[in-house]
Length: 617
Figure 1 (cartoon, rainbow, N blue to C red):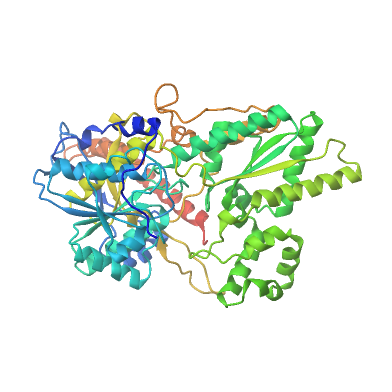
Figure 2 (figure 1 turned 135 degrees about the vertical axis):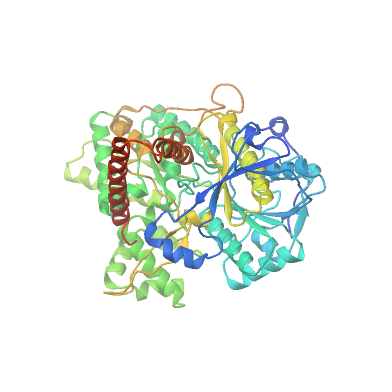
């Protein structure tokens, strides 16, 4: 039985109060005139992949950045759009539900109606499957009334979350043509926006008039790059989980006899685990990026945890809280290799019950070493992208099991003389996904929805809606759009000695920068968190009053206004041009040439070393 999409739902008093909240709009999006300034053409983030990306996206690669301007801006070459004929736009949820997604729809609906009341917004019900089947729901004020500032994706729902195969792409093209859509807005993360870029390229190639726009909405927080500072939903997810973690920390401190192992969302990157650690101060967090960088084995991690337990026991502390990202299992080299071998056997059609009989000797030995519950979970059929079903693999229970076994061993050997180790395990994977979104996510999603209209009004295709300077108040946010192809990289690998590296362009998940300020903040406090029980409780999610306007630590401590710094650089270049003109003195010209040559040499070296350090993946 299909869900009743878009029906008015019963709201609690708090939900009703939240539905009345009106997000703020930055000055550059106010009014009925769209003012857009186009910057220079973009290039690939990874210069080595530029050729591959430009070949794969010949019609949408290299497009310029777009900046939307306030009415008072004095930009001589700005495009001013005052005519707004009625348009038809489709919107679809793609990817795991993330708090704030409904506000993207609300913001887009508000924008198209403000600019022309005769415009139409169609929501595809059932996610991308609904897009292929042309199942739509017209978005109206009545439909939106009980979904404004609310969590979940239940207004439209979601399904397979991909537009990848030739058949799927053709069905998407057919749907957009049949419904006479001027624009298609895809709400999702790295995979969904990669698909959006490919769809935009296909539309351009087939002369389909529909323009494709992507919106960065993912609870994992891993769609980050020089154009995208944050993702809708990440703020809410981290605040809600941090309260749950803090409650557990208080419980641990009260009973003083349990170690809590908590697994959090985060597949390819550990952003949620890092942010929640900075907010709630658990004793220890194991980040997938640290494990990958240091090539830590399962034995190494177990020893690290046991040494921490023993150090705390030496101070008379027999409790603690440990955070683990769900993607950790794929960061541990021997477990990842085992998973790859298992997935290969799946691909050969071998049944899960027989896979253990076909493993190589080393893989078979590791498999037999693992406890039965983990063996069963590792044998689950992989996801469509060949990754493991991470939400189903209880890594926290595996680590708790191994730590308990090792502590018992140390106790028997007499090297540990403390109390018996006791563990309680949790997976906070679904508790926060459908929650009421934070004030930040309500505002951010609403603004991105408005930007989607501005992108379509400017006739842009294959772009993502972007906002920078997010750590400032909304009235100082800078709104724009960047080509999705400019966010792509090419993961390269070789199929044999001497073979040329190959790969496919995609928007890949951004991992934690182990040289970044947020990670430095964690490391500078790690020893205190481990030993001193500096548990911090941010409390329930706040909508008004103290804490309502708090931003995530990872957003606040980083200098992420990439476009602001690009503009500042342009200011300096313009000053140089104004000073060094025909007729200037020889001394000025000589100094300018020397300085620019030096800067060019330095930038070339930095760019080359950065590229080489990335290496083949």
